[in-house]
Length: 409
Image 1 (cartoon, rainbow, N blue to C red):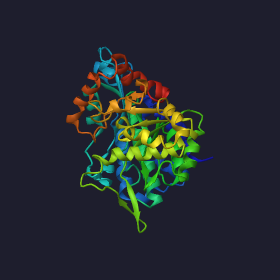
Image 2: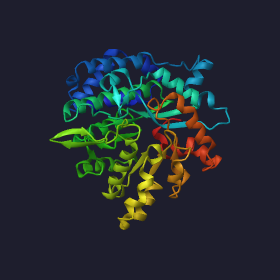
Image 3: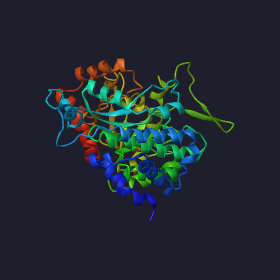
Image 4: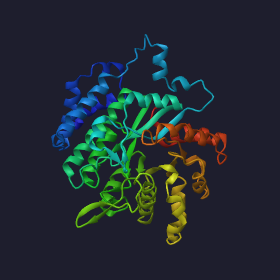
């Protein structure tokens, strides 16, 4: 029996973390569990050097600093922190589920000091929870952002090890804040076999609510046949799978080396990320990946980026899949609002007849600056393109319909 199976009962219980389990958590047993489960999956965490120590320290700190309400002596403040909808339960505003937000522990920022050509933002869990409260967000489904685990391009062992540590870190945040947080797991593509192992571990042992994929992995887009075994493995799982498709830096290979493919003088994350979303969705559509694997739903950020402007140009040249593709865009694609998208941009998506039942809310915190957040939220709330009932659904019932029991809200 694999060691990860032996430890799965402990990890599964931690996903739903009772106060007694968290109270008994010690640095030794947290570290031992993480290392043993990695060893069982033939993952050598030691290849990460000092990053391993920093990450394990961070993970242990999350458990040790977790707030643990005593059911018999819960204070009003504790109820606000751990209640189903916290202090927003009695407000007229709909409770908000944020499906696009990110964690940036300090050890990860040290590895990735810039993201998309911009400085990687600082982040900590307490400031994050305070931000949620300030926006009326009752539950967030978060991930690490691009470049995900692909910090060591062309090096499978550290990429695979980093993916495991990132998922353990994300799971720790969720176990310490089970009513407030859920996470998307990262996977070490383009190493397909390892990605399948990691996805299954994150979903089955750590309790991930979905899978985070960047638009390309080392220049390989998601519809490439190299990734077909991964899609097939996830599609074959008994429950519906949720893939979050996040833009990443585009690359081309020059003399066997990956070179960033941004032809402009502007930071890649500012504009090029929108076109990355269009590229990978074009690839997923024309390769019929989204048609062939029907047990997978997709969350698309920034109401599709540049993709809606290109849909007819792409699909009118492929009439055999035109109607079927629109059916998928209207049922298994879910479009989040992250960024300044509800001033005008969302009109382009809705112009294709995408139903409001597929709309979700996202903040892109902390990569979208805090000073922009209130205005972006207000733009959704004041939009004349959707009704008040549709706005309530966007904030609350649409994500509940997508995730079901995969999140607590």
